[in-house]
Length: 451
Image (cartoon, rainbow, N blue to C red; front, side, top):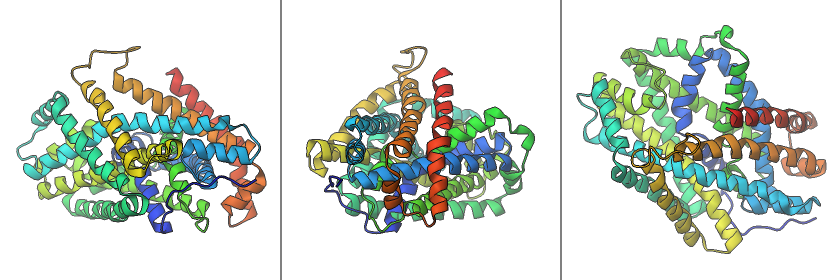
C-alpha cells in the first residue's frame, strides 16, 4: 500500500542529517552527567556496560524510530498513522507519535531555562572571567541566578530566539546551515580544551577516573543506570529523531547513520570528561557536584587556572552550542506537526511553538523561586514535568515504537526500508527490537515510575 507523502524539505546531504542528529542527541546531560556517572560506577567497566546497552537497546529503537519517520514521511503522529495504515494496522498507533511530541514539548519548557543559565554564564565568562571567585562566591552567584526570575526569563528568551530563528528559516536554510557550522565548532572546542588540559594538569587523574576499570562496582543497579543513560542519551522517543527521519532521502542508509550518531554521541561524552575533570582534579574540587559542577564548581577552577578567562568562555560556548542544537530538535518536531496537522506555514508554526514554550517557561523559571514551595506529591512543577517526560513518556514511547516496528510492521517493509548490509545484521536487529528491547525498556519504565 502506498504511503501518504509529506511536503517537507529533505536534508541536502547525509552530512547535514548526521550533524543535526548528533546535535540533537548531544545535550547538556552528555557534557556533565555521563563522565560523572561513568567515574562513579566503575570507569571503563561502566563504559563497556553502557556500550552494550547502547547497541543492544538504544540502537535498535533509534533505527526503528528513523524507519517510521522516513517511511511515514511526516511529523511523528502522522508518520505513525501512515505506516500503521499501510500495514493494515489501526491508525490509533498515531498516539505513540503524540506521546513523543508531548515529551519534547514538556522537556523543552524546562530545558530552555537551563540553556538560559548557560547563556547567562557565557555572558559572565566574557564580562568577568569569574575573576576572584571562590566556592562561597560561586555558590552565592548561582543562588542569585536562581532567585532572579527576570534575569532567567531574559536569557531563556535569548536561547529560544536563537532556536526559533533556526527553525523559522527552514530545514535547509536554517537547521542545516546552523548544525553544519555549530557541530564542527563543538567538536573543535572539545578537542582544543582537552589538549589544553594535557598541559594544564589533572589529565592523569581524569583518565583514571574515566577509564580505570573497576568491575567490583558493576552491580545490578549499575546495569539499570547504564540502560537509562543509553536510552536517554541518544534522544529516542522524543519525536526529534522521527522528524529528522522524515526529511531523510531514501539513498541514505539508516543503520549506517545510526552507528555514526551513537559513536559520535559517546565520543563527545568521553571527550567532555577530559575537558571537565582535569580542571576539577587539578584544583582539588569535588567531581561529584552534579549540576553544581557546571555552575558552582567549575567557575572556581576557571578563576584559579592559568588562561582561565579564555577557557571559561570556550567552555560555556561549548555548552551553549550543545544546548541550542538539542533545543532545535525538540522544537522542530512540534513545528513539523503544526505544519502537517493544521496546514500552517513553517513561519507561523515556528512562531506559535516557540511563543508557547516562552510563555510556559515563565512557570519553569518561577518554580526555582516564587513557586518553589508549590508542590504536587512533594514535587515542584519542574520536578513534575521532568518525571512525567523522562520517567513516563520516554520509556513508554520507546517501548511502543519497538513493539510497533518489531511486531506490527511486516518483515518485508523493514527489509525494503532499512537495507542492512547483510541479512545477518537485519536478523540481529529484528531479534533485538522484538525480544530484547521491549522487556528491557519495560524494566526501565517500571523502576522509573515506582521510585
